[in-house]
Image (cartoon, rainbow, N blue to C red; front, side):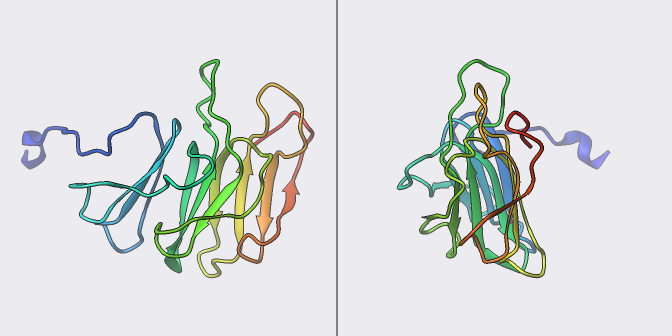
Length: 168
């Protein structure tokens, strides 16, 4: 009965097709939201206000977001729209990493994956990262499957590859 009086309301951020969200472990006030059409927004007050934090990068289309559970200042973004239900899709240019909670970003590889659908970070070692890549939508390419880094994104190994037509 207590919750029957609650109603949905818009709390932001403005934009469209929010495709990826990530929250800071243990801190419900800090969340990140990424848009397929471009941009990452951050709130530090539980959604009351949002700040755009990905404007200075080469590619703004977001497919995946993740925070390192053992170091929530480490934020990872995979680019490229992954809602594949319409004829035009924003193509990404790889993975970006922030070591300071989204203040600055560094591009760290997987440039030709085009559409990254998921990032998973080892809960005990933030240098071990897995990235699921869909690859090119309308052509064959070998930059598909699951990639792994054991050095925080300095290098990547494709650890699950089916063929040049099958992505993750």
